[in-house]
Length: 124
Image (cartoon, helix red, strand yellow):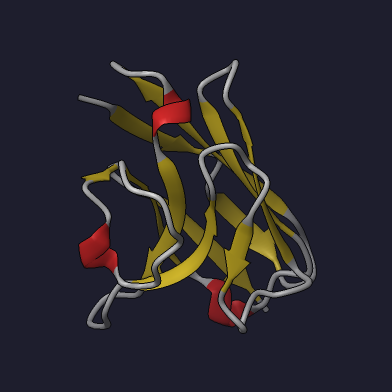
């Protein structure tokens, strides 16, 4: 089974940038469709971005389009989320997720494996 570990979170001012990483171990990352989700305390976890197994297709939540970019390096077993023009409303715990099937679903229930999350805080 694949294990996922996120890193790269932190505190940044509004308008700044962060790059999150999700390192996979246990199985090769190329077997999985990958996604990034985020969750604010007391709210449901929401889809942020997803990328296909090969990296040729991606999907974004409307709230992050044109600001966030998901990418993957299967040789390095790592998925990235480049976050630019950050807003205070982007503050959340960000989770990396994997699913063995194809497709880029929005619902978290379609993803099988999860990392522990990394906190992103955007200050005004």
